[in-house]
Length: 130
Image 1 (spheres, rainbow, N blue to C red):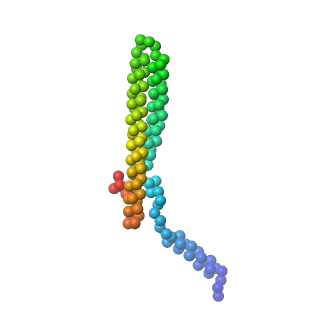
Image 2: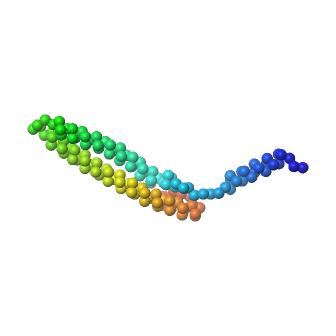
Image 3: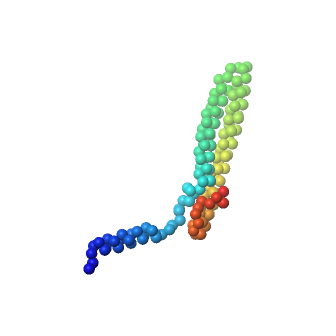
């Protein structure tokens, strides 16, 4: 004789089986798990903050140069500080640009390596990618 309780048990077992043995899909964004990319993103954030402080240093040095009293050497010191701050700003911008380019190449490499590991059934991220 067929009872509703049998149907409920059968459905429960079927649903549990689907959850346990469901399809295994690759992660569409494996780069979020990569510790090297996380480090690069943190470095970019820090450098962008340094860029803002460097902009402030440039303004301060230019104001020092403008407001300098004659024959005190403040104008020369302000010009020197402005030059150094602008040079530092250029270096920071270049480093940010380098890290952004490096990040894009790393994302491509991570995606390729992740698919290799996924197809082989191995855990990822692997320390050999560093």
